[in-house]
Image 1 (tube, helix red, strand yellow):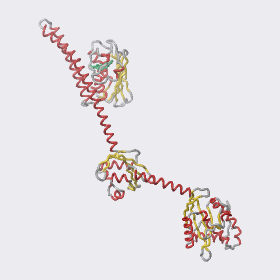
Image 2 (tube, rainbow, N blue to C red):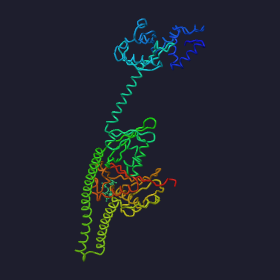
Image 3 (tube, protein in one colour):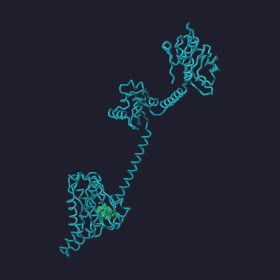
Image 4 (cartoon, rainbow, N blue to C red):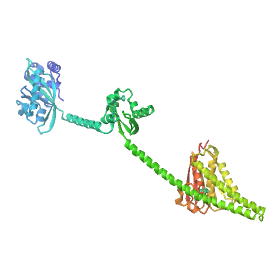
Length: 538
Ligand code: ATP
Ligand code: MG
């Protein structure tokens, strides 16, 4: 860095010049060159302030600096100027710079500018578009200053030019981008509205005006424009909340247009800088119609599927009833026939025996009817559940005991595991366990043991009923809980196929799940997991 040492007198003169002309100090230095040439500085100490020194400063400057007389003859050019125009200084000094302004209109502008400086010498900026010596487009911002003599007559003009090509290019690109954005904003078939930080409308696009019917001025003048779009206060509140939340993504609302039409619309918010936001919306009537059609089609499919299932259940029900009622009815009929025909010949004991058979078969049919009714109550949601704290171990032992008392084969049923209390419906739980144990007994050999295990988990309790019976074929497992479904290997064993579907519904009512693992010829394990309803410690 060089230090310029100047005398107080010179510094004062420069200061005066800066103030009088509004030039920068650099521009003033150019003026000083002129002053030196005119030998108007008479100061001993001005020897430090040599012309060569100032020339050095100006030549090291990247701006283009030149001086010319009102007839456009160059009297001074700096290095940057020479380089820019690709000429030697000697080729330029004493020549008109109009060689760089070949067009008539360019020249007219130059002379108009010189005429202006003759009237008023103050600095003025102008942007000139031209080409470099190697043919590239450039924009130069020239700041012209008139230098006047003691008679206030313009005798020279000094110009400092700055290459602002990059700036102009950026500006042009910005303008171009703005044009594109504004073309999109106005022509896109999507509503767009820009809001200021107070949520007031700033702009709306054409599609907004064309579809919703309100201009930005009309909306700004309206005391509550949102009430026009969303008349229902609660709904309006929901929309406003969504707008303020600036959540990403789209949300569907029904928007009322100015003529009262209710449109299905979808809206998104975009956060802009300085608290501004952009609301974007689109009409989705078509999409909604498609969606509705899809929902209806899906519903129809579900209805058809349900109908098919119902038909299947009905078929299975009919075949179950015909089978399950025919057998006891046949037993009842034969017993009654026997009594009617051989009443005189039968002993009292034989008659009682026959009547007991009738009684058992009536009980069987009654149980079946009970099951059907229970199933129908559970399916229709009419079954009520009564929750109470239940000690599970005594309950399990009670269920197992009832089997031991009822069955003649004295089947070993082993109960293991922890007890504890759970909040549940005793009746439903008893029914679940009874059914699963009765299946385990029914589908295994007469002497094979059945296991009931209770396991206390953190928030659940798990019951496992395991047998080593005939097992269930894989293809039947997924249908087991369907009403009246019976596995292919169980056809010879009497049953309605209703027990497990009731069990499944009971478990669901109790908020639990039931699963099954089985292997043909090895055995079956049913696992019921129920919410405990209270912590193990309580
Ligand atoms: P019921 O309604 O009289 O109980 P069911 O026993 O046939 O008749 P579900 O209890 O619903 O009806 O059982 C459905 C089917 O699941 C049975 O028919 C049988 O094929 C199969 N199944 C159930 N439990 C077992 C088991 N422990 N071992 C083998 N198969 C089983
Ligand atoms: Mg059963």
